[in-house]
View 1 (cartoon, one colour):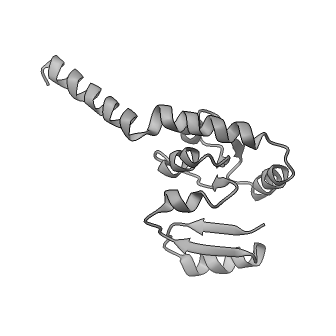
View 2 (cartoon, rainbow, N blue to C red; view 1 turned 30 degrees about the vertical axis):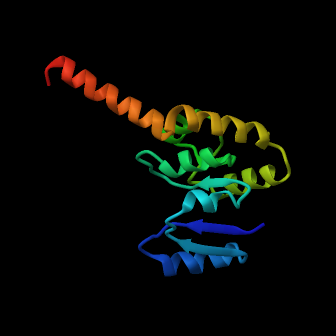
Length: 145
């Protein structure tokens, strides 16, 4: 199994050393202007945050049909509509166990993929975004704001 990490952090050199200790087969990719296209190359998506404001990367991963392994945060449960495998972000053994179980086929990845695409299309597509934005504008205009 190969680990690929997208994104940037302030202490990338420290991160590189720590990841190398536990996961020799890994790659830090940094920022990607076409992450949607990159995600299609993988088997699953994991987000190990201890805090998230929205989690746009989760919506992007669902749109590609990737099964999700996510930190057990309320916002991530909301974004994914509970269509994910959740782990304790403060317990690396819990994440390792969930990855092992995913790799062994103990989760229904096919259903997660299908539902993820449906959730993404119904809630996070450009069309849905524009419709919701127009509804907000209409409410403001109609209320006299």
